[in-house]
Amino acid sequence: MTLPELPAQPELLKAILEPLLDDFLFWFDRAEQLLTKESIDFLTPEEQAALCNRLAVATAEVRSTQALFKAMDGSIGIEVAVMKPWHALVTECWQIGARWRREQAQQLPPETSQ
Image (cartoon, rainbow, N blue to C red):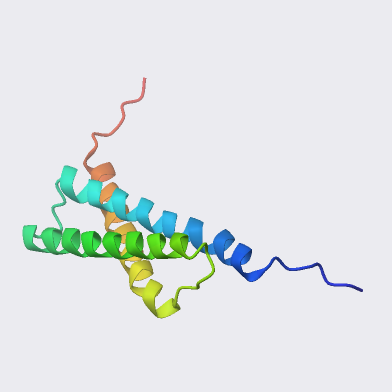
C-alpha cells in the first residue's frame, strides 16, 4: 500500500493558512458591523468600545500577518500562540452575536394564525 503524495509544505501552508486568515478578517468585520450598527443592550458602552478596540487591533494583526505571509510566498508558518487570541476573539464575538439574535427574536411580536 502506498500513501498518497502530500503537497509540498508551502502549498499546504497556503491551502490552510490563507483561508484561515481570510476567515478571521471576515468574522472580525461582521462583529465590528454588529457592534457599530446595532444596539446591544447586554453590553455597556464601555464594553462595546473595548471590544471594538480589540477587534481593530486583531484585524491589524491579521492583515500584517497576511502581508508577511504573502511577501514570503507562503513559505512561513504562523505560531498557534499567535492565532489563539484571534480564535478566542472570534468565539467571543460569535457568542455575543448569537445572544443578540436570540434577544431580537424574543422581542418579535407573536405570529397570528389565520
